[in-house]
Amino acid sequence: MARRNPERRAALLDAAIEVLAAEGARGLTFRAVDQRAAVPTGTASNYFAGREEILTGAGERVYERLVPDEATLAAPFDGPRDRARLVELMHELVERVAAFPTGFLALLELRLEAARRPELREVLTTRIRADLDFNVENHLKTGLPGDATTVKLLWLALNWLIIERLTLPGLLDPDESTDLVEALVERLTA
Amino acid sequence: MARRNPERRAALLDAAIEVLAAEGARGLTFRAVDQRAAVPTGTASNYFAGREEILTGAGERVYERLVPDEATLAAPFDGPRDRARLVELMHELVERVAAFPTGFLALLELRLEAARRPELREVLTTRIRADLDFNVENHLKTGLPGDATTVKLLWLALNWLIIERLTLPGLLDPDESTDLVEALVERLTA
Image (cartoon, rainbow over all chains, first blue to last red; front, side):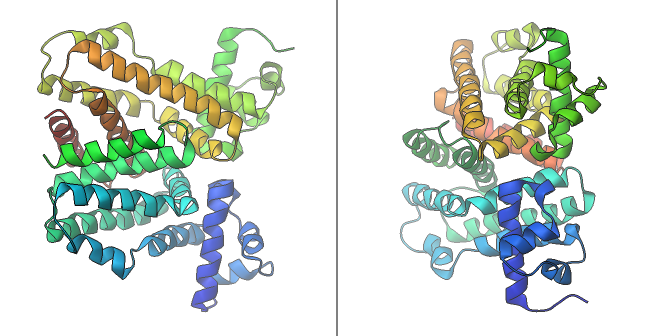
């Protein structure tokens, strides 16, 4: 008999994201989620049937929190449709994702856990593929430079750039990182 | 009083890599390493002063095992120096890294752990930066198409391609993945 207070459920999943980022998938227990959410012991188990459900729920919740707001969604349709603008938008994208570091790290933990759990793997694959396809379609609608392949290659490279920033921030200095984003867009849209 | 049998030390680190890939950084204990290496309890603690030393040692060991053999090192200096050859070499590189999946997954676990441990972060940053710089210098010596920026951008995108392959293998189908490597090389060297 799962409880149905959506705000409480979201708060528990937010707590699960923080636990995943701080402790890894193995650290994710009902008790750890309750503690992080500062709710009575037993609360999480009223909302989720098992750890698997918290894991998949946390993955969905990261994407929910990363959905761009209306201004961000509208931005590519405003202003010039040239490479300089695409560079700017890609810088903003990297900043936006990196601004929720625990979300990105939690998703990485979930990917590693997915290598061991087929059901989680299926949920993440569907969710992340939908995100990639949305990005491709949306990009083509904007009329900005680049085709579907451009978007997929940007996605590959920028994801790893964000991993570097969040896990080994000293590896690429900020100027090098900025230059790489610029060169990436220029070359992939040439 | 650390023991000094290099083969035994390497075998313990190989066991640590498997534990990291299977259980995550939190699962890495002296006992788990002993068990995985099938040695008497207490062996790992004769070789390593603490968990931190196993973590950094395992990171080093992954790179040691990924060092290309002489034939692989010589390959880029043989044959044509054109884009088609670079595409071929990048396919081989992806296959070579993906053929040691627990090594790649263990490094990811170490990166996530590095987000929490400054000392580990420093060791990994130095090691991975040296690897990137070696790749850049070596590429320039081969005379294959592409500059230093090409190599860094290949490195970003191919690393994420390997993450996909190992954690969510259904996300990109094999043909899509092959096409992406080809397009990546073509555009980054144009």
